[in-house]
Length: 119
Image (cartoon, rainbow, N blue to C red):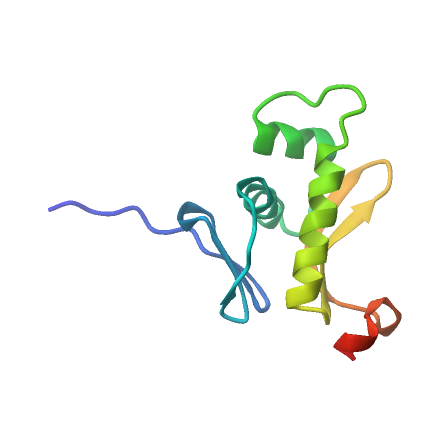
């Protein structure tokens, strides 16, 4: 009899990430994420509450050392924030720590950060 590995499920409030299934859901609705976006989201969620350096994220997601002025991590964090804010506007998940990196932590959004359509 074969035993299957448990499926990794990362949950942060109404956000559910299933890396092995290449799937992320917000309130049960599937998010349209690229492979890199999903890998970055999972990498951050696995380190919830911890500030993660851009270099560490790049090595984890892209599989190589960060080169010079490469802004790929920042670009993909921006894309993720946009998609997460559209799906769950009342929550912020990815927080910038200038000069250090990013931290994944679900926190209620401040009212002045929300768009008119999300109020």
